[in-house]
Length: 495
Image (cartoon, rainbow, N blue to C red; front, side, top):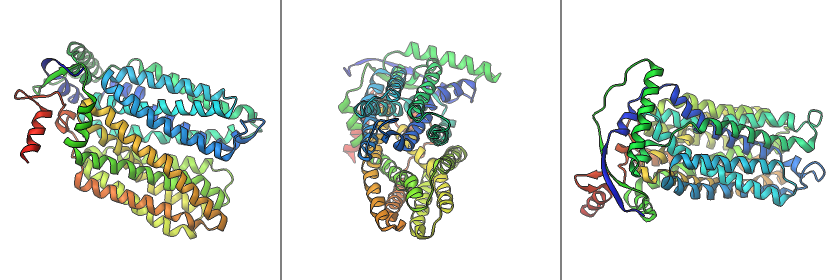
Protein backbone atom coordinates (compact mmCIF):
# COMPACT_ATOMS: atom_id res chain seq x y z
CA UNK A 1 0.00 0.00 0.00
CA UNK A 2 2.91 2.33 0.58
CA UNK A 3 4.83 1.43 -2.58
CA UNK A 4 6.56 4.31 -4.39
CA UNK A 5 4.75 5.20 -7.65
CA UNK A 6 7.09 7.85 -9.09
CA UNK A 7 9.20 10.93 -8.41
CA UNK A 8 8.30 14.48 -9.30
CA UNK A 9 9.70 17.94 -8.74
CA UNK A 10 6.97 20.47 -8.05
CA UNK A 11 6.60 24.14 -7.23
CA UNK A 12 3.01 23.80 -5.95
CA UNK A 13 3.79 24.67 -2.27
CA UNK A 14 5.74 27.80 -3.24
CA UNK A 15 2.98 28.92 -5.63
CA UNK A 16 0.31 28.58 -2.93
CA UNK A 17 2.39 30.33 -0.25
CA UNK A 18 3.25 33.38 -2.38
CA UNK A 19 -0.40 34.24 -3.15
CA UNK A 20 -1.75 37.57 -1.87
CA UNK A 21 -4.96 37.48 0.16
CA UNK A 22 -8.04 37.53 -2.08
CA UNK A 23 -11.77 36.82 -2.02
CA UNK A 24 -11.00 33.22 -2.96
CA UNK A 25 -9.36 32.70 0.44
CA UNK A 26 -12.56 33.91 2.11
CA UNK A 27 -14.34 31.06 0.32
CA UNK A 28 -11.99 28.65 2.09
CA UNK A 29 -12.50 30.37 5.44
CA UNK A 30 -16.29 30.42 5.17
CA UNK A 31 -16.66 26.98 3.64
CA UNK A 32 -14.34 25.23 6.06
CA UNK A 33 -13.88 27.40 9.13
CA UNK A 34 -17.47 28.17 10.06
CA UNK A 35 -18.04 24.62 11.30
CA UNK A 36 -16.53 25.60 14.66
CA UNK A 37 -19.56 27.87 15.07
CA UNK A 38 -21.67 24.71 14.91
CA UNK A 39 -19.59 23.05 17.63
CA UNK A 40 -19.95 26.08 19.88
CA UNK A 41 -23.68 26.19 19.21
CA UNK A 42 -24.03 22.48 20.04
CA UNK A 43 -22.10 22.58 23.31
CA UNK A 44 -23.83 25.69 24.64
CA UNK A 45 -27.36 24.69 23.65
CA UNK A 46 -27.01 21.23 25.17
CA UNK A 47 -25.66 22.71 28.39
CA UNK A 48 -28.62 25.07 28.61
CA UNK A 49 -31.27 22.49 27.69
CA UNK A 50 -30.82 20.18 30.67
CA UNK A 51 -33.96 21.29 32.52
CA UNK A 52 -36.08 21.12 29.35
CA UNK A 53 -34.90 17.56 28.66
CA UNK A 54 -35.74 16.44 32.21
CA UNK A 55 -39.45 17.26 31.89
CA UNK A 56 -41.32 13.97 31.27
CA UNK A 57 -44.11 15.69 29.33
CA UNK A 58 -42.36 18.24 27.09
CA UNK A 59 -38.86 16.72 27.19
CA UNK A 60 -37.54 13.15 27.40
CA UNK A 61 -37.87 12.57 31.14
CA UNK A 62 -34.12 12.37 31.57
CA UNK A 63 -32.40 12.37 34.96
CA UNK A 64 -29.33 14.40 35.94
CA UNK A 65 -27.19 11.31 35.43
CA UNK A 66 -28.70 10.89 31.96
CA UNK A 67 -27.76 14.48 31.12
CA UNK A 68 -24.21 13.85 32.30
CA UNK A 69 -24.01 10.60 30.32
CA UNK A 70 -25.21 12.39 27.18
CA UNK A 71 -22.42 14.94 27.59
CA UNK A 72 -19.83 12.23 28.10
CA UNK A 73 -21.01 10.20 25.10
CA UNK A 74 -20.83 13.32 22.87
CA UNK A 75 -17.20 13.79 23.95
CA UNK A 76 -16.43 10.10 23.46
CA UNK A 77 -17.92 10.32 19.97
CA UNK A 78 -15.78 13.36 19.18
CA UNK A 79 -12.60 11.60 20.30
CA UNK A 80 -13.34 8.44 18.30
CA UNK A 81 -14.52 10.45 15.29
CA UNK A 82 -11.32 12.48 15.26
CA UNK A 83 -9.15 9.36 15.28
CA UNK A 84 -11.31 7.46 12.77
CA UNK A 85 -11.67 10.27 10.24
CA UNK A 86 -8.17 11.62 10.88
CA UNK A 87 -6.40 8.60 9.42
CA UNK A 88 -8.93 8.47 6.55
CA UNK A 89 -8.24 12.15 5.78
CA UNK A 90 -4.54 11.48 5.37
CA UNK A 91 -5.28 8.41 3.25
CA UNK A 92 -8.18 9.44 1.00
CA UNK A 93 -7.89 13.23 0.84
CA UNK A 94 -9.14 16.34 2.62
CA UNK A 95 -12.19 17.12 0.47
CA UNK A 96 -13.85 13.69 0.59
CA UNK A 97 -13.61 13.66 4.35
CA UNK A 98 -14.65 17.25 5.08
CA UNK A 99 -17.82 16.59 3.06
CA UNK A 100 -18.51 13.25 4.77
CA UNK A 101 -17.92 14.54 8.31
CA UNK A 102 -20.30 17.46 7.82
CA UNK A 103 -22.96 15.10 6.48
CA UNK A 104 -22.54 12.86 9.53
CA UNK A 105 -22.93 15.87 11.82
CA UNK A 106 -26.01 17.17 9.96
CA UNK A 107 -27.85 13.83 9.95
CA UNK A 108 -27.08 13.21 13.63
CA UNK A 109 -28.30 16.68 14.61
CA UNK A 110 -31.58 16.13 12.75
CA UNK A 111 -31.97 12.80 14.58
CA UNK A 112 -31.38 14.63 17.87
CA UNK A 113 -34.22 17.04 17.14
CA UNK A 114 -36.57 14.10 16.57
CA UNK A 115 -35.52 12.16 19.69
CA UNK A 116 -38.39 10.19 21.21
CA UNK A 117 -36.52 8.46 24.05
CA UNK A 118 -33.27 8.89 26.01
CA UNK A 119 -31.63 5.96 24.18
CA UNK A 120 -32.36 7.67 20.83
CA UNK A 121 -30.96 10.93 22.18
CA UNK A 122 -27.76 9.21 23.39
CA UNK A 123 -27.19 7.57 19.99
CA UNK A 124 -27.76 10.86 18.15
CA UNK A 125 -25.39 12.73 20.49
CA UNK A 126 -22.66 10.13 19.95
CA UNK A 127 -22.80 10.47 16.17
CA UNK A 128 -23.04 14.27 16.38
CA UNK A 129 -19.77 14.22 18.31
CA UNK A 130 -18.37 11.64 15.88
CA UNK A 131 -18.91 14.06 12.99
CA UNK A 132 -17.56 17.09 14.87
CA UNK A 133 -14.41 15.21 15.89
CA UNK A 134 -13.80 14.26 12.27
CA UNK A 135 -14.25 17.90 11.27
CA UNK A 136 -11.37 19.03 13.48
CA UNK A 137 -8.94 16.70 11.72
CA UNK A 138 -10.14 17.22 8.13
CA UNK A 139 -10.68 20.97 8.30
CA UNK A 140 -7.54 22.15 10.08
CA UNK A 141 -5.33 20.15 7.72
CA UNK A 142 -7.16 21.44 4.62
CA UNK A 143 -7.07 25.07 5.75
CA UNK A 144 -3.37 25.05 6.54
CA UNK A 145 -2.54 23.53 3.15
CA UNK A 146 -4.57 26.13 1.22
CA UNK A 147 -3.83 29.36 3.13
CA UNK A 148 -0.57 31.26 2.27
CA UNK A 149 2.21 30.96 4.87
CA UNK A 150 2.09 34.69 5.63
CA UNK A 151 -1.52 34.49 6.86
CA UNK A 152 -1.68 30.94 8.21
CA UNK A 153 -1.28 31.80 11.90
CA UNK A 154 -3.96 34.49 12.16
CA UNK A 155 -6.42 32.53 10.01
CA UNK A 156 -6.03 29.34 12.05
CA UNK A 157 -6.31 31.12 15.41
CA UNK A 158 -9.37 33.12 14.35
CA UNK A 159 -11.15 30.15 12.79
CA UNK A 160 -10.64 27.94 15.83
CA UNK A 161 -11.73 30.86 18.01
CA UNK A 162 -15.00 31.14 16.05
CA UNK A 163 -16.25 28.29 18.25
CA UNK A 164 -17.20 31.09 20.63
CA UNK A 165 -19.38 32.85 18.05
CA UNK A 166 -21.49 29.71 18.11
CA UNK A 167 -21.32 29.58 21.89
CA UNK A 168 -22.56 33.17 22.15
CA UNK A 169 -25.32 32.49 19.63
CA UNK A 170 -26.34 29.35 21.48
CA UNK A 171 -26.47 31.19 24.80
CA UNK A 172 -28.67 33.93 23.35
CA UNK A 173 -30.91 31.43 21.52
CA UNK A 174 -31.71 29.63 24.74
CA UNK A 175 -33.31 32.76 26.19
CA UNK A 176 -36.39 32.75 23.86
CA UNK A 177 -36.32 29.00 23.20
CA UNK A 178 -36.66 28.21 26.90
CA UNK A 179 -39.32 30.88 27.51
CA UNK A 180 -42.73 29.12 27.56
CA UNK A 181 -44.48 32.42 26.74
CA UNK A 182 -42.58 32.55 23.42
CA UNK A 183 -42.32 28.91 22.27
CA UNK A 184 -44.10 25.75 23.40
CA UNK A 185 -41.63 23.93 25.72
CA UNK A 186 -42.24 20.71 23.80
CA UNK A 187 -40.78 22.27 20.64
CA UNK A 188 -38.23 24.77 21.96
CA UNK A 189 -35.37 22.33 22.54
CA UNK A 190 -36.11 20.44 19.30
CA UNK A 191 -36.03 23.67 17.33
CA UNK A 192 -32.62 24.50 18.79
CA UNK A 193 -31.09 21.35 17.30
CA UNK A 194 -32.95 21.88 14.02
CA UNK A 195 -31.37 25.32 13.62
CA UNK A 196 -27.92 23.73 13.84
CA UNK A 197 -28.79 21.36 11.01
CA UNK A 198 -30.05 24.22 8.81
CA UNK A 199 -26.78 26.11 9.34
CA UNK A 200 -24.81 22.96 8.49
CA UNK A 201 -26.64 22.58 5.16
CA UNK A 202 -25.73 26.18 4.28
CA UNK A 203 -22.06 25.45 5.05
CA UNK A 204 -22.19 22.30 2.93
CA UNK A 205 -23.37 24.28 -0.10
CA UNK A 206 -20.34 26.58 0.17
CA UNK A 207 -17.93 23.77 0.99
CA UNK A 208 -18.65 21.93 -2.26
CA UNK A 209 -16.69 24.63 -4.11
CA UNK A 210 -13.54 24.30 -1.97
CA UNK A 211 -10.96 22.21 -3.90
CA UNK A 212 -8.92 19.26 -2.73
CA UNK A 213 -5.55 20.15 -1.19
CA UNK A 214 -2.99 20.34 -4.03
CA UNK A 215 -0.32 19.36 -1.51
CA UNK A 216 -2.14 16.10 -0.79
CA UNK A 217 -2.71 15.47 -4.49
CA UNK A 218 0.89 15.69 -5.72
CA UNK A 219 2.16 13.39 -2.97
CA UNK A 220 -0.46 10.77 -3.86
CA UNK A 221 0.40 10.58 -7.57
CA UNK A 222 -2.09 13.17 -8.87
CA UNK A 223 0.31 15.97 -9.75
CA UNK A 224 -1.55 16.95 -12.94
CA UNK A 225 -4.72 17.57 -10.93
CA UNK A 226 -2.72 19.52 -8.35
CA UNK A 227 -1.20 21.75 -11.06
CA UNK A 228 -4.62 22.35 -12.61
CA UNK A 229 -6.17 23.35 -9.29
CA UNK A 230 -3.31 25.70 -8.42
CA UNK A 231 -3.47 27.28 -11.90
CA UNK A 232 -7.20 27.91 -11.43
CA UNK A 233 -6.57 29.42 -7.99
CA UNK A 234 -3.82 31.65 -9.40
CA UNK A 235 -6.05 32.84 -12.22
CA UNK A 236 -8.87 33.64 -9.77
CA UNK A 237 -6.59 35.44 -7.31
CA UNK A 238 -4.89 37.50 -10.07
CA UNK A 239 -8.29 38.53 -11.39
CA UNK A 240 -9.61 39.44 -7.94
CA UNK A 241 -6.53 41.46 -6.91
CA UNK A 242 -5.94 43.04 -10.32
CA UNK A 243 -2.19 42.33 -10.15
CA UNK A 244 -0.05 39.72 -11.93
CA UNK A 245 1.52 37.09 -9.68
CA UNK A 246 5.28 36.90 -9.21
CA UNK A 247 7.15 33.88 -10.51
CA UNK A 248 8.50 31.26 -8.09
CA UNK A 249 11.75 29.31 -8.27
CA UNK A 250 11.55 27.16 -5.15
CA UNK A 251 10.74 23.49 -5.80
CA UNK A 252 10.54 20.26 -3.84
CA UNK A 253 11.20 16.71 -5.09
CA UNK A 254 8.75 14.08 -3.88
CA UNK A 255 8.67 10.29 -4.03
CA UNK A 256 4.98 9.73 -4.66
CA UNK A 257 2.95 7.05 -2.89
CA UNK A 258 -0.68 6.04 -3.06
CA UNK A 259 -0.77 5.77 0.73
CA UNK A 260 1.56 6.02 3.72
CA UNK A 261 1.82 3.03 6.10
CA UNK A 262 0.24 3.69 9.49
CA UNK A 263 3.32 2.41 11.36
CA UNK A 264 5.50 4.94 9.54
CA UNK A 265 3.12 7.70 10.64
CA UNK A 266 3.23 6.53 14.27
CA UNK A 267 7.01 6.21 14.15
CA UNK A 268 7.29 9.73 12.77
CA UNK A 269 5.26 11.25 15.58
CA UNK A 270 6.81 9.41 18.50
CA UNK A 271 10.43 8.77 17.46
CA UNK A 272 11.38 11.39 14.86
CA UNK A 273 9.62 14.28 16.60
CA UNK A 274 9.43 13.39 20.32
CA UNK A 275 9.89 17.02 21.46
CA UNK A 276 7.07 18.22 19.23
CA UNK A 277 4.89 15.41 20.54
CA UNK A 278 5.52 16.52 24.14
CA UNK A 279 4.84 20.12 23.09
CA UNK A 280 1.46 19.36 21.51
CA UNK A 281 0.43 17.08 24.36
CA UNK A 282 1.18 19.84 26.88
CA UNK A 283 -0.67 22.53 24.92
CA UNK A 284 -3.82 20.46 24.37
CA UNK A 285 -4.13 19.13 27.91
CA UNK A 286 -3.35 22.54 29.43
CA UNK A 287 -6.05 24.40 27.50
CA UNK A 288 -8.57 21.57 28.01
CA UNK A 289 -8.26 21.73 31.78
CA UNK A 290 -8.25 25.52 31.80
CA UNK A 291 -11.63 25.62 30.08
CA UNK A 292 -13.04 22.92 32.30
CA UNK A 293 -11.80 24.65 35.45
CA UNK A 294 -13.71 27.80 34.60
CA UNK A 295 -16.12 27.64 31.66
CA UNK A 296 -17.73 24.26 32.30
CA UNK A 297 -18.36 25.12 35.93
CA UNK A 298 -19.26 28.75 35.20
CA UNK A 299 -23.03 28.35 34.76
CA UNK A 300 -23.33 26.09 37.81
CA UNK A 301 -21.23 28.50 39.84
CA UNK A 302 -23.46 31.44 38.94
CA UNK A 303 -26.68 29.62 39.82
CA UNK A 304 -25.48 27.59 42.81
CA UNK A 305 -23.42 30.19 44.65
CA UNK A 306 -24.20 33.63 43.21
CA UNK A 307 -27.99 33.54 42.84
CA UNK A 308 -28.19 33.99 39.05
CA UNK A 309 -31.33 32.49 37.50
CA UNK A 310 -30.85 33.23 33.77
CA UNK A 311 -27.23 32.59 32.75
CA UNK A 312 -27.64 33.16 29.00
CA UNK A 313 -26.52 36.81 29.03
CA UNK A 314 -23.48 36.02 31.17
CA UNK A 315 -22.48 33.12 28.94
CA UNK A 316 -22.88 35.25 25.82
CA UNK A 317 -20.57 38.00 27.14
CA UNK A 318 -18.02 35.40 28.20
CA UNK A 319 -18.14 33.69 24.79
CA UNK A 320 -17.77 36.95 22.85
CA UNK A 321 -14.64 37.83 24.84
CA UNK A 322 -13.13 34.50 23.75
CA UNK A 323 -13.74 35.22 20.08
CA UNK A 324 -12.52 38.80 20.45
CA UNK A 325 -9.24 37.50 21.86
CA UNK A 326 -8.68 35.11 18.96
CA UNK A 327 -9.65 37.76 16.41
CA UNK A 328 -7.57 40.62 17.86
CA UNK A 329 -4.51 38.65 18.97
CA UNK A 330 -4.47 36.30 15.94
CA UNK A 331 -2.33 38.55 13.68
CA UNK A 332 0.35 38.75 16.38
CA UNK A 333 1.06 35.03 16.00
CA UNK A 334 2.35 35.89 12.50
CA UNK A 335 4.03 39.21 13.39
CA UNK A 336 5.58 38.58 16.82
CA UNK A 337 5.84 34.82 16.38
CA UNK A 338 4.34 31.55 17.56
CA UNK A 339 6.69 30.83 20.48
CA UNK A 340 6.45 34.24 22.13
CA UNK A 341 2.67 34.57 21.72
CA UNK A 342 1.77 31.02 22.80
CA UNK A 343 4.06 31.26 25.82
CA UNK A 344 2.57 34.61 26.83
CA UNK A 345 -1.09 33.68 26.37
CA UNK A 346 -0.73 30.38 28.23
CA UNK A 347 1.32 31.67 31.17
CA UNK A 348 -0.62 34.94 31.57
CA UNK A 349 -4.10 33.36 31.44
CA UNK A 350 -2.99 30.53 33.74
CA UNK A 351 -1.63 32.98 36.29
CA UNK A 352 -4.86 35.02 36.18
CA UNK A 353 -6.91 31.86 36.72
CA UNK A 354 -4.80 31.04 39.78
CA UNK A 355 -5.36 34.54 41.19
CA UNK A 356 -9.11 34.14 40.56
CA UNK A 357 -9.05 30.94 42.61
CA UNK A 358 -7.71 32.89 45.58
CA UNK A 359 -10.39 35.59 45.12
CA UNK A 360 -13.38 33.24 44.93
CA UNK A 361 -14.50 33.98 48.47
CA UNK A 362 -15.24 37.61 47.62
CA UNK A 363 -16.52 37.52 44.01
CA UNK A 364 -19.93 38.57 42.72
CA UNK A 365 -21.60 37.40 39.49
CA UNK A 366 -20.34 40.58 37.80
CA UNK A 367 -16.76 40.40 39.09
CA UNK A 368 -16.41 36.68 38.31
CA UNK A 369 -17.65 37.30 34.78
CA UNK A 370 -15.26 40.22 34.38
CA UNK A 371 -12.33 38.08 35.52
CA UNK A 372 -13.41 35.35 33.08
CA UNK A 373 -13.62 37.85 30.23
CA UNK A 374 -10.04 39.00 30.86
CA UNK A 375 -8.60 35.50 31.37
CA UNK A 376 -10.15 33.99 28.27
CA UNK A 377 -9.48 36.96 26.01
CA UNK A 378 -5.88 35.71 26.15
CA UNK A 379 -6.54 32.00 26.72
CA UNK A 380 -8.75 31.55 23.66
CA UNK A 381 -5.97 32.73 21.33
CA UNK A 382 -3.52 30.36 23.00
CA UNK A 383 -5.94 27.42 22.90
CA UNK A 384 -6.62 28.02 19.20
CA UNK A 385 -2.87 28.11 18.59
CA UNK A 386 -2.62 24.57 20.00
CA UNK A 387 -4.50 23.33 16.92
CA UNK A 388 -2.30 25.50 14.72
CA UNK A 389 0.83 23.97 16.28
CA UNK A 390 -0.31 20.35 15.82
CA UNK A 391 -1.14 21.12 12.19
CA UNK A 392 2.17 22.83 11.37
CA UNK A 393 4.93 20.88 13.10
CA UNK A 394 4.45 17.38 11.67
CA UNK A 395 4.89 16.12 8.08
CA UNK A 396 2.01 16.56 5.66
CA UNK A 397 1.28 12.84 5.42
CA UNK A 398 0.59 12.74 9.18
CA UNK A 399 -1.10 16.14 9.56
CA UNK A 400 -4.75 15.16 9.93
CA UNK A 401 -3.99 12.17 12.14
CA UNK A 402 -1.74 14.25 14.42
CA UNK A 403 -4.46 16.87 14.84
CA UNK A 404 -6.93 14.08 15.58
CA UNK A 405 -4.61 12.39 18.06
CA UNK A 406 -3.89 15.48 20.13
CA UNK A 407 -7.49 16.70 19.87
CA UNK A 408 -8.67 13.33 21.21
CA UNK A 409 -6.22 13.44 24.11
CA UNK A 410 -7.13 17.01 25.04
CA UNK A 411 -10.86 16.46 24.62
CA UNK A 412 -10.80 13.25 26.66
CA UNK A 413 -8.78 14.87 29.43
CA UNK A 414 -10.96 17.97 29.54
CA UNK A 415 -14.33 16.64 28.44
CA UNK A 416 -14.50 13.35 30.34
CA UNK A 417 -12.29 13.46 33.43
CA UNK A 418 -12.60 17.25 33.79
CA UNK A 419 -16.39 17.50 34.22
CA UNK A 420 -16.36 14.54 36.61
CA UNK A 421 -13.79 16.23 38.83
CA UNK A 422 -15.25 19.73 38.72
CA UNK A 423 -18.83 18.48 39.03
CA UNK A 424 -17.82 16.66 42.18
CA UNK A 425 -16.14 19.81 43.53
CA UNK A 426 -19.30 21.87 42.96
CA UNK A 427 -21.45 19.22 44.62
CA UNK A 428 -19.22 19.17 47.69
CA UNK A 429 -18.96 22.96 47.83
CA UNK A 430 -22.71 23.47 47.44
CA UNK A 431 -23.37 21.18 50.41
CA UNK A 432 -21.26 23.54 52.54
CA UNK A 433 -22.49 26.64 50.65
CA UNK A 434 -18.83 27.61 50.24
CA UNK A 435 -17.75 28.71 46.77
CA UNK A 436 -14.06 28.46 47.70
CA UNK A 437 -14.45 24.68 47.58
CA UNK A 438 -14.14 24.77 43.78
CA UNK A 439 -10.88 26.73 43.87
CA UNK A 440 -8.85 23.53 43.55
CA UNK A 441 -10.23 23.13 40.03
CA UNK A 442 -8.99 26.61 39.17
CA UNK A 443 -5.56 25.85 40.58
CA UNK A 444 -5.23 22.61 38.59
CA UNK A 445 -6.12 24.45 35.39
CA UNK A 446 -3.68 27.25 36.24
CA UNK A 447 -0.75 24.90 36.91
CA UNK A 448 -1.31 22.92 33.70
CA UNK A 449 -1.68 26.08 31.62
CA UNK A 450 1.46 27.72 33.01
CA UNK A 451 3.34 24.44 32.61
CA UNK A 452 2.30 24.21 28.96
CA UNK A 453 3.45 27.79 28.40
CA UNK A 454 6.88 26.94 29.83
CA UNK A 455 7.11 23.86 27.58
CA UNK A 456 6.30 26.11 24.59
CA UNK A 457 9.10 28.51 25.59
CA UNK A 458 11.66 25.69 25.43
CA UNK A 459 10.27 23.37 22.74
CA UNK A 460 8.16 25.71 20.58
CA UNK A 461 8.73 25.89 16.83
CA UNK A 462 9.19 29.22 15.03
CA UNK A 463 6.77 28.53 12.19
CA UNK A 464 5.61 32.06 11.32
CA UNK A 465 5.93 32.91 7.62
CA UNK A 466 7.50 29.54 6.78
CA UNK A 467 6.16 26.99 4.34
CA UNK A 468 4.76 23.81 5.85
CA UNK A 469 7.40 21.80 4.00
CA UNK A 470 10.24 23.77 5.62
CA UNK A 471 8.80 23.30 9.12
CA UNK A 472 8.51 19.53 8.72
CA UNK A 473 9.66 17.88 5.49
CA UNK A 474 7.17 15.44 3.95
CA UNK A 475 8.02 11.79 4.60
CA UNK A 476 8.16 11.31 0.84
CA UNK A 477 10.60 14.13 0.09
CA UNK A 478 13.62 13.12 -1.99
CA UNK A 479 16.80 14.58 -0.48
CA UNK A 480 19.78 13.75 -2.71
CA UNK A 481 18.33 10.35 -3.53
CA UNK A 482 17.28 9.54 0.01
CA UNK A 483 13.91 9.98 1.65
CA UNK A 484 13.65 12.31 4.62
CA UNK A 485 12.60 9.42 6.85
CA UNK A 486 15.91 7.64 6.09
CA UNK A 487 17.94 10.81 6.41
CA UNK A 488 16.43 11.58 9.79
CA UNK A 489 16.98 8.03 10.98
CA UNK A 490 20.61 8.19 9.89
CA UNK A 491 21.10 11.51 11.61
CA UNK A 492 19.61 10.19 14.85
CA UNK A 493 21.80 7.09 14.66
CA UNK A 494 24.86 9.32 14.24
CA UNK A 495 23.88 11.34 17.30
